Amino acid sequence: MSETLLSNYPPPRRVLVIYAHPDDAEFFAGGTIARWASEGAHITLFLITSGDKGTGDRTFSPADLRNLRETETRSAAEMLGINDVIFMRWPDGEVISSLALRRAIVRMIRLKQPDTVLSSDPRNRWRGNRRLNHPDHWIVASEVMSAVYPAARDHLNFPELLRDEGLEPYITTYLYLALPTEPNLRIETTAFQPQKLAALSEHKSQIHDFEALRQRLAANHDLTLSSANEPRYAEYFRLITLS
Image (cartoon, rainbow, N blue to C red; front, side):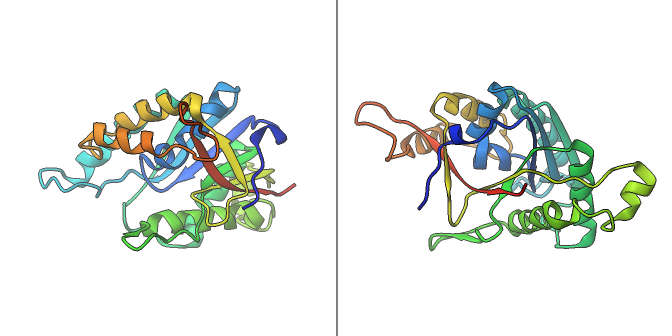
């Protein structure tokens, strides 16, 4: 595994974080997002769904759960230092790879003009022998890659965005893929672990035993960084430089 420290790259100034569900950003890259915010980055979180099916509580309607999870997400975003939260509100669990999804992502890239896009690795479809990755995760991640390159770059892709909204083609410099199958970047997040935990604690509809989660994350310290008396934490990415 090739590892490169973040200090070898310019800190991002405008970040567009794109995930499928509320709480994805916090779990997958919460420490890194908090670190970037502390370094002065303007961060937009763009969520394709509002997680309107993610409950075992039969008293919830999809609309009720959507409203609750959007409220939780905004509170969590404030904990991390995220500036804007935008919900696309597609139905949870019904995301499919499509030109409509790609267009929506391209539109957001051209609108926000980020130097950095953060999503996840579309090749990550299972973990170990007991856990499958939600299909919304890898479908969104795959369309993020297709939107970043080449669709957002080329004016003949979705020309109506330029014609009707004046959104010029745009080239993103950096693409960060969280939960990578082949990481090439480690970002230390030790100082931002409390913010990550605080953000996760806002997702009460999803995390019913926060203390158990806290202990599990505390135990998941980075063995290559930590000493016997000082646990340290990191998040790993595949970083692709495009321009």
